[in-house]
Image (cartoon, helix red, strand yellow):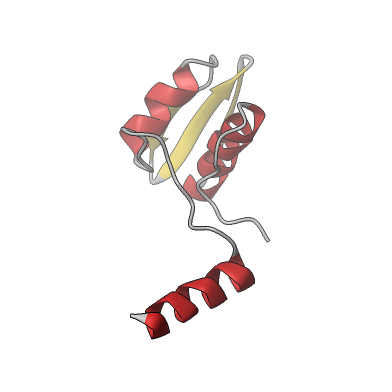
Length: 86
């Protein structure tokens, strides 16, 4: 048991506390679509790319870019982002 506590303490010292998310938060396209719609950003899958409509402007992008936008909104709210920041 003591060895486990030492390993946990070492991990936290090196990498910080484990990330925690609120109940019901998921990293899925359906959740991201509903979450971003609250901010007037609409996403949909089109020909293996994600179409983002933001401020009347449309663009095709990757899922990683969609997650970046979700993370920007979550950080602005003071919440934990999905992607690990270095």
